[in-house]
Length: 87
Image (cartoon, rainbow, N blue to C red):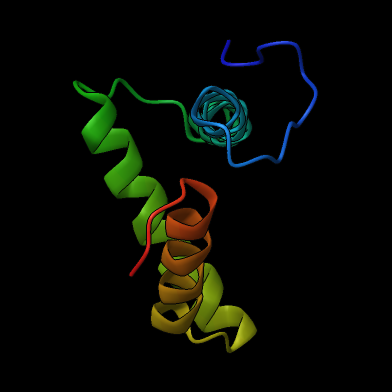
């Protein structure tokens, strides 16, 4: 799922950006699927599953004394750079 050929391309070519974005979505899908397997439950929507996952990330950030808002902002900046979006 979302693996493509599995190799990053890291170029400014639009097809390569789409490939790499899809590849990275696969990494997130692997993580969210592992989370779903761990917590079980019958989530009615993928949105509900992600919402619960994010809530648990807040708990983890609290336990590790991590500024989750800053981490989310940094991740957003990385995402925008990775898809070739100028801020």
